[in-house]
Amino acid sequence: MPTSAPPGNRFERRRAETRRALIRAARQILAETGDGSASIQVIAERADVGFGSFYNHFQSKTELFDMAVVDALEEFGQNFDERLTGIDDPAELVAAGFRLSARMADSHPELMQVLRRRGLGHIHTDNGLTRRAVRDFEAGMASGRFTTVDPDVALSALGGTLLSLVELRFARPDLDGDESAVNLAEMVLRMLGVPPDDAHEVARRPLPDPA
Image (cartoon, rainbow, N blue to C red):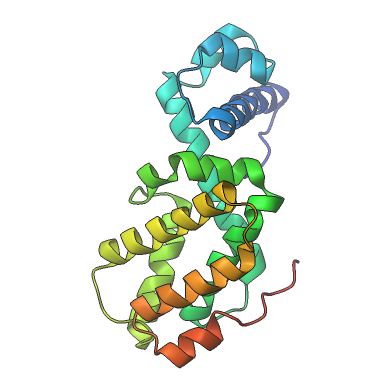
């Protein structure tokens, strides 16, 4: 889960840990059921904090569950940053992102379940993952790697396709996840204007080793 600089005193540290515990609990609930109707009492018990602590941090359950999704999206983006540092080709970044997402269904199942269940509603929000995707797509257009289209339209296509891949990984665990991701990445690159032979090669480049 994303972390920030530790608060300066004991009270602030305890307050920050309570907030993190509530977000962790909300993420677990979303991953398990996708249902945001759990009572505040259930959330507080899952977080192992007092009922009254909830309103010291969030005005409503809706706010908490939205923050839980944003937290998951940021962790997702941070995983990309850690693995894909040093890749300059926007097309390779897109392809590697699809392949890493398929693998994270196994390595980070809770995180990917949250994205599976709630990610669609956050494709066009100002979250860390969206900013990264727009940055890479705009770099691809500026370099001529991608066809020039409206970034919002491209984001819809990329985000929807990525979430469909995540859904496929959980719905059909018998399929070869990496092969599915490679084939889908190749299709997406061609959709973005990358020539077929180039898209085929880029989608199959070795992924960077974990840090």
